[in-house]
View 1 (tube, helix red, strand yellow):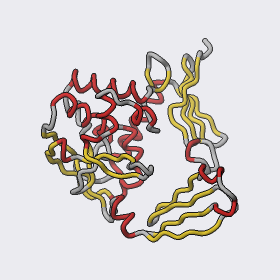
View 2 (cartoon, helix red, strand yellow):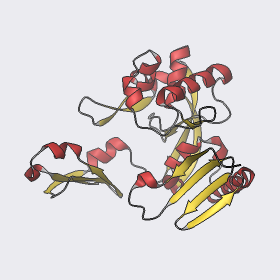
View 3 (cartoon, one colour):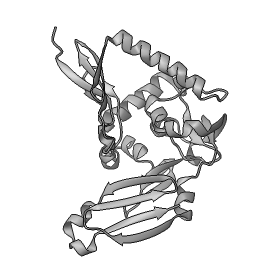
Length: 266
């Protein structure tokens, strides 16, 4: 039987300058393919699950912190914090009122800021104001029935149904915060759904504590911004050890002499 479709389950393509190919594909009706550079591994679905399960056990052993288990975390969020896991010191649990939680959003100038959950793009979408949530760039899961990734709207409705049908928490996938701050690093959809359904209730959260962790606001406060001319459209931004290269689309409409590189040093 030939495969009717190929779905990319994970890829480093979006990273840009990795320099090699790494991609996991679901060849429906055939096998799961793992592409690494010039190598392709052909696995049955069962073999893929077995490898994933073994890798999960290895990660649990490497992250030698009491109470840490991969299965307790949303897989996408776990990938997002993977670079911090070597500095994970402890995990604690707490109860917080929903209105005391903060979410990442953008101000009128497009800068990333923190706002109370009540101003969340997700909560706005639940009340019918969907533009901000629909336009948000995010990683969504595949819909097994539609054979494609969920849209932002579909993901929200899925989470709402999960909270209605299974309550909170479902399993041990808790809303996740870092140290004493109440910024949500994982679980904004669940928090917004809970607030939409039940108001300002108190919910259980997980707090991760890392060595030398610097919050977004403190990074900005301690950073120094430098400007220099560039002969291309590239804007370089970075804080501390982090460096990020972005494309300055607005420069396309300006005179070349106005193009700038922006470098933030922590």
